[in-house]
Amino acid sequence: MALKLLLAYNVREHRAEDYYRFVQTEFLPRAQAIGLVMTEGWQTAYGHYPSRLLAFASQTDEQLRVALASDEWDSIETKLGEFITDYEKRVVYARPNFQFFKPEPQR
Image 1 (cartoon, rainbow, N blue to C red):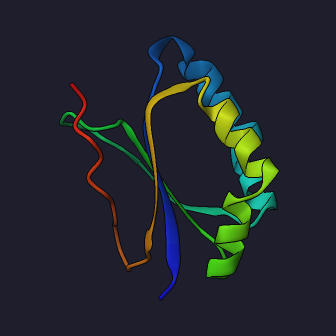
Image 2 (image 1 turned 135 degrees about the vertical axis):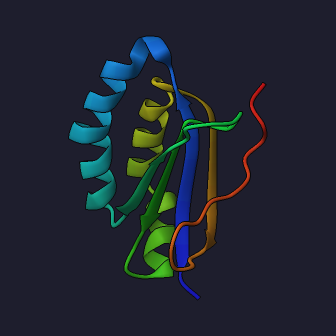
Image 3 (image 1 turned 180 degrees about the vertical axis):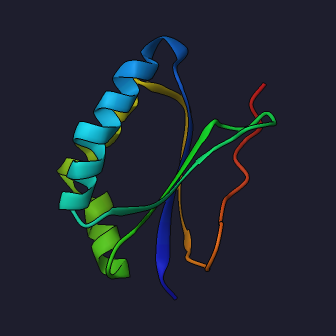
């Protein structure tokens, strides 16, 4: 069964503009270069959960594993941390339609 990478987090309010610039010009292109293609992006409208949920897929499960073990992923994941809080990452079995995991409730 195919795998999918899910990222959940909150954007730091005082870093929102920098966050958007980084994601569009650096994070997504570099993720795609290592074989991770963003398939979904969600904004939480209500509730005490992270405000963002991004989903990534790759052509093969092995490519996903290799990408997540790469220095390039470590680099962009670390830089993403400058703009966000409450970060959680999960690799899950891919299912059709909307898919999420229940992160730790935010207080």
